[in-house]
Length: 128
Image 1 (cartoon, helix red, strand yellow):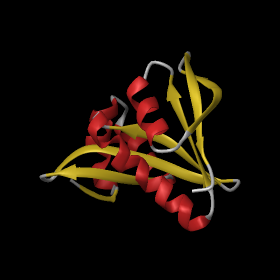
Image 2 (cartoon, one colour):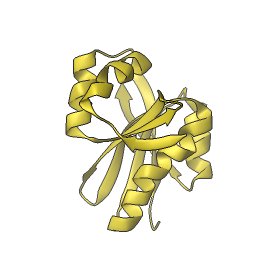
Image 3 (cartoon, one colour):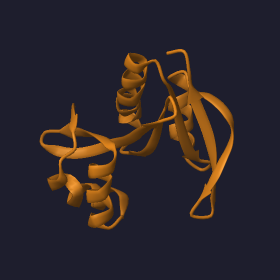
């Protein structure tokens, strides 16, 4: 599996992975850092994040559980180089992402905001 920066041309495949309109994914590629996981030329997942107030905020993580760690390593690596923290919001129902985040050193710091009516959990990694 290879990781690379997303291109606008990837918006269609990202939209199909997330069941989101193509325009939304095109905007994501323009507005955030988006790293794509590719296997044999196929996009199999991605992570998007941005930086605000000395914190990297992971805004989306998509793919299979087996690649979550590789994808989350991208914002963690960036945060280490910039001496920043990383925050991740996870739906309460996404136990696989929560488990991987905990294994990678994220601390569960409490509830997050509701997303489309669903409760979330906030994770944070500091002193990387």
